[in-house]
Image (tube, rainbow, N blue to C red):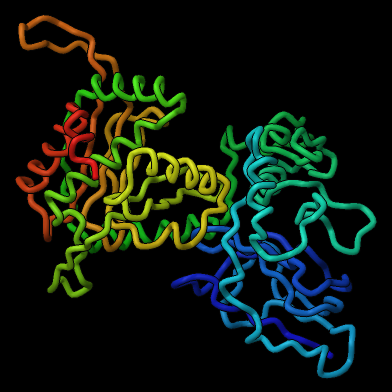
Length: 422
């Protein structure tokens, strides 16, 4: 009996997705709950399993094409004839289509992958370490590699099957592709041009940023913050706790404390710009460069979390986001955003506000610069440049400057931050 798989809802607001890689081909035999295809939404990569066993009869899309939600994705000829072979589409639990990140290309990628897979992310047998990239029904398994690495190999005209992987179980990493000799490189110099389609994440960002600029009247505000004492406090805490803690954890916690004093920056304006809702929770987002594009996960309820709890969440989400495996719920419902351009080396930026938020701040790199002390003596200080963008429909310069000063006071005098921490 022929069964047509209809692409179900795979996330809030998702109406289409890009076919990243078919794990099977026409004529291949599949088992129930076996991953058939990897697709990319505007936020992450999703693995879609087959709800029934049988033989692949038809694939409705080629790799790289855009599939529509509620449209046919593939057909399978079931192996057993009868009622038991018929599996209703409504037995597919949309929630089981967990957001999965492209596998990270760092030295500890394998351990991260094992940890995530051991949690039965897609509720399929993973007892032995057979990669989801393995070809089904083929005598020669495909090279173990993430979709991002496969695209890199393809764009450089490299046969990934010929690349010796240096990762665990022979996984091909980005560095392996970059080191591999390119037989016929594509030159983009000397007047040559090359075109390639935007990824799903890039297209979503293009639309979102354009809409934000067109609908939100931005204004910017910059300030210089002396974080010398904060850097010293972090070193003391790390020495006592014998653990690493990110400065970002201090930035986020102090930002949450400042929001308690100025809740208007954590508010939400309705679409008609007629009502302002003051949100009681602080879901503070932070930008992360990932293998599938820029992602902005958020740490939920920062107002109730300690600096250590925020640090733990920060590390968890960074690891998942960089690999693209962050879950949809971690990307939704952010109330205000921090962008750390200083991690790359920038100092000044004018960030674009995310939809449904009123403000975003960009942190520059921390520089050692000469500054005068109270006795007019020159000292070396750790200086951080911060740059705000705010929605001028609700916020004005005075409100933002006052709020920023409250936040700045906690960063420059971190003891007060610890006293205010709940």
